[in-house]
Length: 268
Ligand code: S3P
Image (cartoon, rainbow, N blue to C red; front, side, top):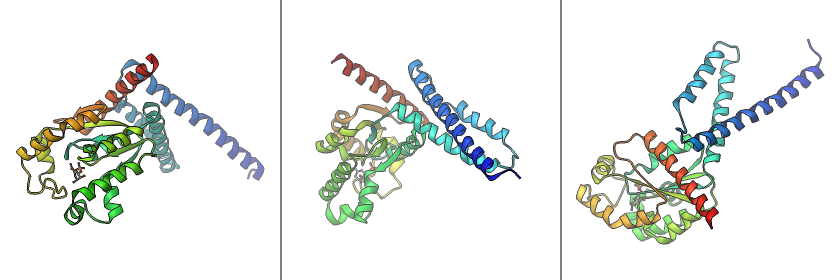
């Protein structure tokens, strides 16, 4: 058996080598993102996920296969975080009418960009220990809107978080002002027909209960449209698109928005 000191030295130098290699790996991941951004290439390709599969083939049946797979899963996550960081530094606030897909898009973006996730409705439910429809029924809409404004204020110090806002959040100007302090605002849209399809079997939205029809949804969208449009930095239509398509379009469009904002700053 080898001497204890020798084993410890090897462990130590192994860690140092590993750190060096991981730094190189993460630098490359960030560089790849910059390259794709600069040349307008698709940012997240399936090809790269397949690389991991071929890597896993190399370690198949190895005595440490399970451990090595776990390590690489974390490396993959760290890589996404590095790439996400190089793309966006601010939060991404998702706004839009009920049923435009904010929660679904939020989860997908969280994984795609290794960002954190917050949802104003869930925060209110947790804080009040009551469902939204019960808050409306017991205390009224104004009380709910105050909770919503407080939830948005409390998110101001978050970093790299996807903030999914309730559909009526941007009706109050103060909410938009507070969101804009730390977030880019993305408006998701869908036709009244698509919205009805997505929400018709839920009774969680008090504003729609008893109003589950295209006419009501269309009327309320029309009333709110100016608020949504005024608040939005970018808009993404969600009809007939997969969540992956929506998120890729969203990211590409936000990158363009950031680049334009950067140019604008330089011109001033
Ligand atoms: C509302 C939308 C809901 C929720 C509440 C009020 C609205 O959130 O905040 O029922 O006024 O549009 P979702 O948009 O997530 O359904």
